[in-house]
Image 1 (tube, rainbow, N blue to C red):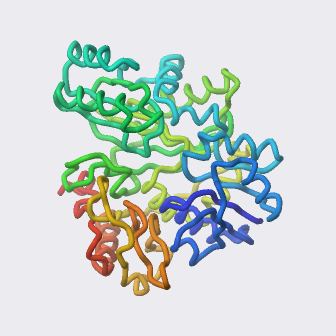
Image 2 (image 1 turned 90 degrees about the vertical axis):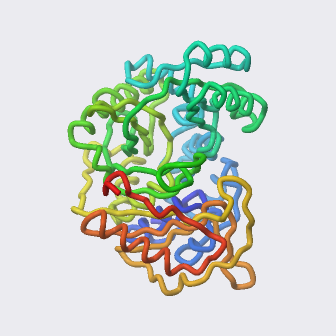
Length: 422
């Protein structure tokens, strides 16, 4: 079959790599792709937020399945346009994707479904928001209501920090995404990422992971899009997983179907777990990045079969076959990220890191300039390895990081620290 993947980051490189392991995949096109993706698949220049253009391109290239990687095309309704054109799509429509694109929508759905999550309030007026914070106290969480590339969340440890975040967001730091803010109670516990496929009503769990959002070792510094991840997440025991399904995932999926906006695609369920009880932190309407990298490394060829079953509405008959293994990815980022950073620095040494079923360097923000691989973004590489246990996976991933010759890059040295106790 001919497959089109939309996106150009580390997540899409991982999705492309997994699809290519499957003999069903005859032709693979990734739009726009990146320098790493271009080494394994066709790439195409295409406005992936223009549903009509994507539908036309898919028709001209006899595409059988479109996999939507990032959130922006989902928010733009690209899945709706493709389905209207009769194409098979992996990814929710615009209305269901509001689980990610609107914090307020998610909270309202959770309230209607009785799903446990943090107490919340929404504000458009900065003075009212500051008054709420003063009445509630800190720590407290301030979120831009809309999409902010994973950066519109501030866990304020003081009232002053919360006030600054409110002024920043409502003052235009995130554009339309910050036209309103959602202020939530602070939830203590351990975070985990839980991934399920949904085809309207049926739900299939496909893996767990733990992300590292803070830029610095020991989970210090500002939030980022993610500096590393590992799978599986030990905190996601069978009991916690079943509780998340019974109390959060299935009620929310049922509520969306009841409203006439059934969800179809992968649902990222961000959880806070305290004393074995999960509460919802957030939903995403697509695979997390870099969690996708460790999930695809572990799932391999079956990932395509599962996504196809989801798109075709056959999840009830699908099964996930897990190996007893672990995977860990370390993000190499440009110095200065998540603040100001320079593009164009040369990256060397990757030719010695041959991709296998146990190790891959997934490209997130790279480009080829005059034959030289250069950094072209904030998060640039996702160095990923499998192992029989997490310690082995981590050792392999960090050995690969040390082999990359990129003085202008940096990475955290403690990915996996919670699970490994160091």
